[in-house]
Amino acid sequence: MAGDDKFASLIGSQRPQATNIVIFGANGDLTKRKLLPALAHMHRWNLLGHDCRIIGVVRQKWTHAYWVSYVHDELLKFFPEAVLNPASWQHIAEKLELVSGDLGEAETYQAIADKLHAHDGRKNALFYLAIPPAWYETVAQHLHTAGLNDESEGFRRVVIEKPFGMDLHSAQGLNRSIQSCFDESQIYRIDHYLGKEAVQNLMVFRFGNSVLEPLWNRNYIDHVQISVSESLGVGYRAGYYETSGALRDMIQSHLMQVMALVAMEPPVSLAADDVRDEKLKVLRSVRRFQAGALQHRAVRAQYAAGEVEGEVEGEPVAAYREEPGIAPESTTETFAAVKFYIDNWRWQGVPFLLRTGKRLPHRVSEICIRFREPPQKLFKLSEENVRNNELIFRLQPDEGMQLTMTAKQPGLSMHLRGVKLDASYGMAGSGMPEAYETLLHDVMLGEAGLFSRADEVEECWNIVMPILDAWKEQKDIATYAAGSMPGCDADVPGMDELLAGCQGGWRDLSRH
Image (tube, rainbow, N blue to C red; front, side, top):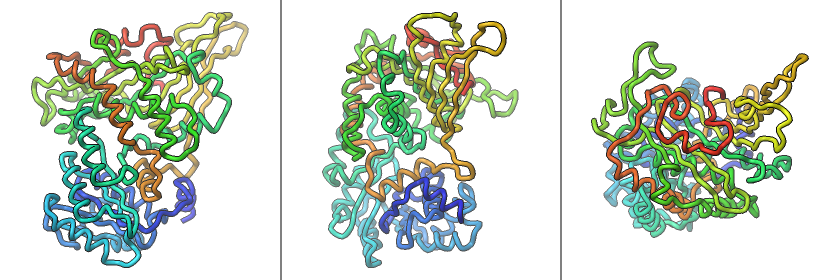
């Protein structure tokens, strides 16, 4: 199809080598919602190749026929185009193979090895650990013992989902364990946020153009707001979320990585380690939290009952503590906001404000670069006009960029108004690849630039540990009504203080 060829050109002209894609946890939620649709899309765009195989690993005693039927039914839910076309589905079905066995038994890994050696010329393997984190070390050690990390016959790469540890100590231990089984170059710690088209374009925008470079520093930028707002609650992730919370789930991983991309210096090259070296410099420059000042730099809250746009009108949604699987006295934060300072020459004194939460009014992710006011106020600027001096990177929905400025209203008066210069990333009729398609494609190509290195992960944990330790000791937590936004239409203690000294106030995400 012509449209598919156009889309393939968007995701990249490079075709990966034939690869065995081994999915541990092949019957899990991540696999059916994200991995299978991503692989089906890649097949549709001819990015898998004829010799690629998808090998599911499950504990259940499934037959091959049942595995094929399972994939068919899940694709029918999440990517129906893949199975409604008989020829397309037949090609996908031919790639499917199955290994049933316990992840703690050596026989399972011998069965995987037999599958990898069953066909000549197809020894490359990508091991995707779509399983609970408690199994990461066990699977890595068994792969090592079975010789499945040996690259003498083809590449072997292991993809590890977040959370990568639950604190600094566990992350360090997991790194040591995985690195004892695989070389760091074989380890891909996935962060689906870095696979988003708008996040990737951020680096191109910064380093492929020179027009904003003179402004990209403390002299012209007042502060940066990085926001991820979710209208949904915890849903089926309640068990994980209760032990994690918003700070671990989003800020420690996704948002700090985005912050590093915004703040990093130009890398020597686009080689993975050159890019990650610059991100690491940013993380190492982040000002550490002191216990006495924590209340002015970190805020948490939990959603209470309320109404969220898109829910049944007039029917309130439950409070977090009333969600299935949540402790009645839980103090897990569903909203977190943190102020970071990057102590280097470019960013000294510029606040980076990261906020994220569930049951907020809208589903929006964006980066707001807010510039300083003009040095001489020739025109009377209102609060609204101050907010017009900003550059917005929209990550979702409607990915794109928006530059807002102040202009004169038409007419005889000197009344001012905001004008928006808007640029969408999309191409008519093509859409854009989802994050998992981009990231799987990169793993198969051996491109590691969008994946976190061990020292990056540990540095992020090192930065947020004082916050986690302090919050662990707090026995109560502020609340906000579901459907409201802390700092805007919900009075959460500390939100105003967090933004003290910054121009323009919290950005209203409903205005995206």
